[in-house]
Length: 236
Ligand SMILES: [Zn+2]
Image 1 (cartoon, rainbow, N blue to C red):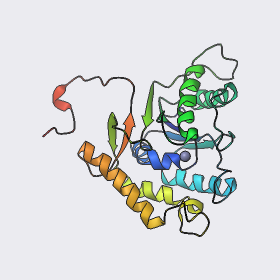
Image 2: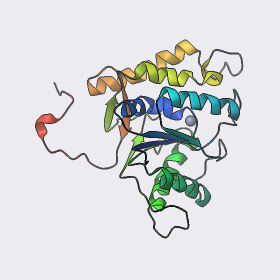
Image 3: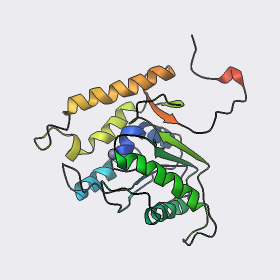
Image 4: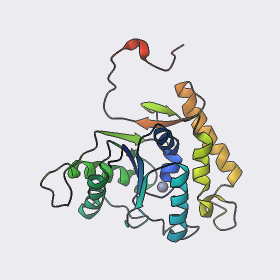
């Protein structure tokens, strides 16, 4: 059974932070959703890759995703090379998503923006019939970019008002990262502060869309409109 949507990100917990509410919403509508993490989190200040694997599985359960997998690309060293493009293309051929959600292609963390370009180029490769790779050629119909990590105006937002609390719970499933503890307390905000930040961001994007909470996305293509009277988001 092919996936309807696949969200790809560099690190376990990136998807929960940038588009977890959207994945949950799509799942609640009956779509098959999946998450591909490129790395396993072995460079994290807190916890081990094994801790994070268990936490990621719990977060996936909370977000009702059908499929989640982590590749073995080194954490902190996500490179857009041939070997990694093939690893991602293999997953795309197996899971055959119609919609691929990538991280935005600019950002502070090199793993994040590299994951974006790597995902895009793997999606292109995966459609080449003569690629020396098992499975038949497949390209996602639509690629969109989750832009929450980047301060920019999104092309559209998804209303996650109903999903907000559950999405927050999926993030808090990463107990090694988000519970209050001594290790790394200089760089990790306390749990209460995390909730405030996540809520402020979701509120901000919600405001742009005229709803309470939302997640932001960018698409490179223009929007196609059939009936002007059905356009959402009030102007005045
Ligand atoms: Zn990350």
